Length: 111
Length: 140
Image 1 (cartoon, one colour):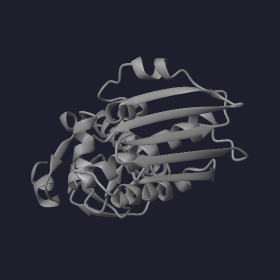
Image 2 (cartoon, each protein chain N blue to C red):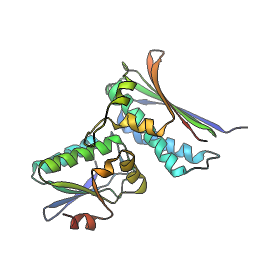
Image 3 (cartoon, rainbow over the protein chains, first blue to last red):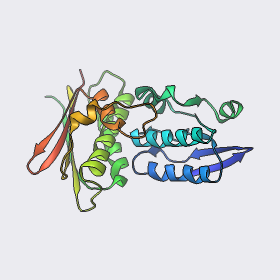
C-alpha cells in the first residue's frame, strides 16, 4: 500500500496515497500497521482523503488496526472521508465503531 | 429500440485486476442512456458489487489458484443491471455466508452481505463445470 507516515508526538499520522483500498492492497496495509504496533506505536490517525473507493477488505484492514490499537491501549482514528467512502461505513454500520473526523487537526486534538 | 450494453471479460485469478473491472463497471453506469437516480452512487455500487463478487471468486471459490480464471458478464439496460461472475472452484454455500452474523469487530464476511444489500436478486449455482454468482439490480 502506498502511504506516508509522519510522527506527531506519540501519534502516527498515516496518509493513504491510493485511490482504492481493496483485496489487492489491504493485506499489505494490515502488515504495515502491525509493523508500527510492533514498534510500540499504537495511536494512529488514518487520513483517507485520497481514497475514492473502499471495499469490505479495506474496511476489514481498518477494523484489524482498530482492534490492535485498542488491545494495546491506544486508538485508531479516521479522517478525511470522501462521501462515498463515508457511505460505506454507514452501509456496514462501522461508523458506530470508528471515531471519524473531518480533518487531521480535529483527529489530533481528540487524543 | 431499447439501449442494451453487454460486456464479457475473462481475467486471471488475481486481485490486481479488481480496479480495472471496477472502472469498467463505473464507466458503464455513466454511459447508460436513461437513469433518473443518483448516477454517482449507482456507479460506486456497481464497482463495489463487482469488486466483492470477484474477490470472493478469486480468494474463496478459486482459492487463489493462479492457473484458474474468472469470467465476468455485465448486461445493462434501461430497466436492470445483470451481473454474472463465473469461478472454476468447488463452490461455496451462499445461504450459510448470507445468514452468518457479522459482529462490529469482525474483519471478514461483509462482502456477501454488501452484495445482498445493494442487489435485488442474488443466487449462486453450478453451471457447466463452473459456478456462477448471478446478481440483478432493477433500475426502475
